[in-house]
Amino acid sequence: MEQTDIIVRTATFADADYAPIITAEMEASARARGTGIAKRSPDYVALKMDEGKAVIAVTTSGEWVGFCYIEAWGDEEYVANSGLIVSPAFRKTGVAKKIKEAVFKLSRLKYPKAKIFGLTTGLAVMKINSDLGYEPVTYSELTNDEQFWTGCKSCVNFEILMSKDRKNCMCTAMLYDPADHYEPEETAQDFKTHSKLYERFMKIKKNRMLRFEKKQKGAGGNKMVFRR
Image (cartoon, rainbow, N blue to C red; front, top):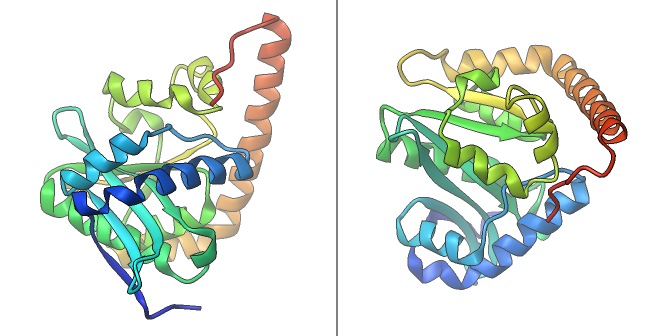
């Protein structure tokens, strides 16, 4: 059910007080899903707000609802819309889609020539991305900026990523290329047509990755695993 008392806007440093709540919910949500995230500190989130590179959703009474931020990589050739999170009380209200639409527009405004990409384990986020014109791609089409991939160290799946030479992991990569892309109507229709196939693929991918991880651990003994 859509709520009408929610405001979605570009965040400012005045929103920094929300940063600890946002990062705590990011971590709690990832833990509940059994998936990983590139961990961010409240100070980092506050910095993104101060730079005008984040979108926040709040109620008219000032309650935090949701958040997402922008990161530029590879000399601003690539941009990632990262850290999408919605407060549990406001999930399934349509606000996640509004936040993604707003941060996508903000990314196009600030970096009009950049390729916009995302990594996700969620089918719902894949659908939202498809509605915006993103397409599923291989990891080789993403940025090769070492700093971006270093950010994955705090993810519970980092060992899988590295064992695959950064060519694959639990996440699905999606990309919007302003110089070469289908229209949103086309990518949205493609996702609708193949949504069951995508869902099945993601389940198979997850099972295979987990089996691979168990096999690697068995073969390597007490290997280091990055945990949060």
